[in-house]
Every structure is written in structure tokens, then in C-alpha cells.
Amino acid sequence: MNLRDLVYGLYARRVEGRLDHAQVPKHIGVILDGNRRWAKASGGTPEQGHKAGASKIMEMLGWCTETDVEVVTLWMLSTDNLNRPEAQLVPLLGIIEDAVRTIASDGRWRVHHVGTMDLLPQRTQAVLKEAQEATRHIDGILVNVAVGYGGRQEIADAVRSLLLDHAERGTSFEELAEVVDIDMIAEHLYTRGQPDPDLVIRTSGEQRLSGFMLWQSAHSEYYFCEVHWPAFRKVDFLRALRDYAARHRRYGT
Image (cartoon, rainbow, N blue to C red):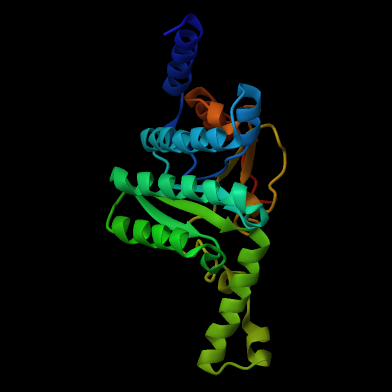
């Protein structure tokens, strides 16, 4: 261990020691940004960047376990990403599939897919379904893997599901229009039954949501971190929690 790592380790322990676990966010959303830029800066390939980012996921979930986080949503692949050239998309999907298998095989976390399953290749669909089924019984952190996810798509899917549900019940459009409300739509989101994210973290310095959890993040706190995702350290995670704990949440007021 070099001097820099030693200093960071000591600083991380100091921040963690002062962290009030009662103020820890229960649901954290993470936009895993910067894999390709990290690889370029390191002289590596995009595939190496994505593999490094996938490895970081396990570290992040370990930190969440240590700090009493209950739900984590990881944005691993957007619907826009599905339009990438096949030469880029196929290796990326393989890395994501391996990451999901690794999360599921750990034994501490329950996997739940959020996104449009039908847009994904059959092999990816199978991996996600198997991970969900294999971890269904686990009473640990709920890990939402957002693969083939888009915020607008989620809302459109929720409205479509709501309409189909009430059509099966024989509800007319006029009747539905009179009673539809926020809670009814929320019941048809990919994350139905879950708490909304308290904190959304985005790495690599970009200060935008890019459509991440548009509905659920209405009252979330945001933390934008300069480092690229593969370089995200425990001290960066703890700083995000500390920053969150210091804020006075107003919930839109």
C-alpha cells in the first residue's frame, strides 16, 4: 500500500466514524457513468472500462451493506444504449450479464430487473429472470438492475399497464379519467411497492439525470461526483452519504 492509499484509507475511516446511520438514505440510485472515459484516460479499451465498472458494482454493494442502505438501483444500460453498433453492444451486454450473475451468486442481495424486458436479447432476458428467481428468497439489499431502462419509457409502460388493467375490469375511459391519480400510476411502475430513491449519485462529473427514474426522483437529493465510475472509491461514497445527511429535505416545498 502506497502513502496515498494509506491517507485515503484513514480519511475514509474518519468520515465513516462520523456518519450517522440514522441519516443514511434507504434507497440510493446510481448512474454508473464514465467507464469509457476512464478507459481512454488509462490507455485501455472501452471493453476494459466496462469490465472495471462492473467490478466496482460489487464494492459499492458491499459499502451499502455496511451502512444500512436497503435498496440500490444501478443504471447499467439505457434504452438509448441499445442503439449502439452491434460490435459495441454485444460485448457490453455480456459484461452486464456476468455482473448480474455475480450479484445474484453472492448470496447477500435480492435482484430485481427494472426496464423493458422485450427490448433485450433473449440471452440477456434469461440471465435477468434467472437472477430474480434465484434471489427471490433473500432478505438482503434489494438491487434493482436497470438494464434497457429509460425514464420516459417507464412512465409510458406504466400508463399502458394501467389502461390494460382497467380495460380487463371493464372500466370505461370516462370512469378511469375521473379516478386516475398519482398513486394509481405509481402502482404500475417498474419499482412498484418500493420506496422512491432518497439519493441519486452520478459519477464522472455530468450534472444531469438523463431520464433516470423521472417519476421516482421528484423529491430525491442529487450528488454529482467528479470521478469516473471505475475510480469511484469508498471515500467518495461516504462523502455522498455525509452530504445527504447534512441536507434538510423539503420534499418540493
